[in-house]
Amino acid sequence: MELLQLQYFLTVARLEHVTEAARNLHVTQSSLSKTIQRLEEDLGVPLFDRTGRKLRLNEFGSRFLYRVERALFELEQGKQELTDLSSPEHGILELAVTTASTLPSILQEFRRKRPYIQFHVQMLTTQEMVKLLHRGEVDFCLSSPPVEGKDIECKIVCIDPILVAVPKGHRLADRNSVSLTELREEWFVGVKRGYGTRDLVDSVCKSEGFVPKYVYEGDEPARLSSLVEAEIGIAFIPSTARNSQGHLKYLQVENHELIREIALLWNRNRYISRTAQEFREIVVEYFATISKETI
Image (cartoon, rainbow, N blue to C red; front, top):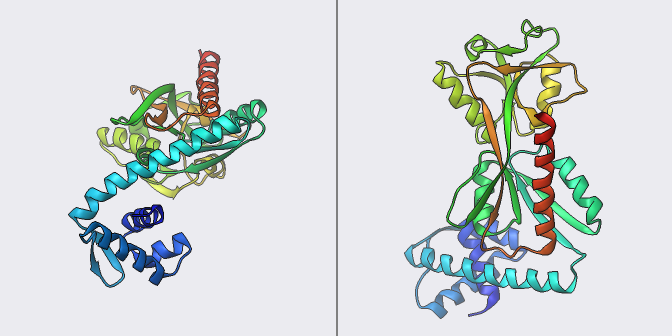
């Protein structure tokens, strides 16, 4: 059994499609198929049920995948630990976020302290983020809502009120607060389902007897302020994402504690480098500072 066979098997098992797996691995389909076939011969059992180029893990494959993921995960952790010991001033920090409004300030502070460390950030839905977290493929996640799990450490770093953003010429622009029921006939702009703030707001509004009507649903929360300013619709926007330079009015929500919790997440089995530890300290300090400023 070779390491290359295990790496190929892992990719095929996750995609369950030979063509896509071969493209992902930059090898030919025939080479990939032969490698998987040799692995099955070594193990003495088939790992997939096959229908053309479409594969589906069978019971043997599912059980073996669990072991392979653990083995390759440990090897990758060992590699990262050695890199940390030999070149502590260099490396890559892997991040995934479901909320990005505070990220520029955090990364700016991190880069000031560790200018030679690179970082790679992915903006994901909660489900996508959790998948990477369980696999140990990211150092940290900045998430709203928080996520619990047996292999996940979860630290709440911020309690963030959700406000209603309206353009300056809106009928509610002279108000400081609004009840949810007053918004039932409004048109909204927002992110797609699957993002924590959207799912939370929809749930609370449903408890008030209505479903928000969205005229725009996107993947970029930062765009919502400009859409509200253009009078396309109003929006639920977290306090930490307010645009103080824009021509918007932000209203408190009456009779509801409409808040989101922002959490820093990491896989407790993943090796935490000195760089990653320092990033965690920066995140905690940043949110502690902005919490004091809002008191």
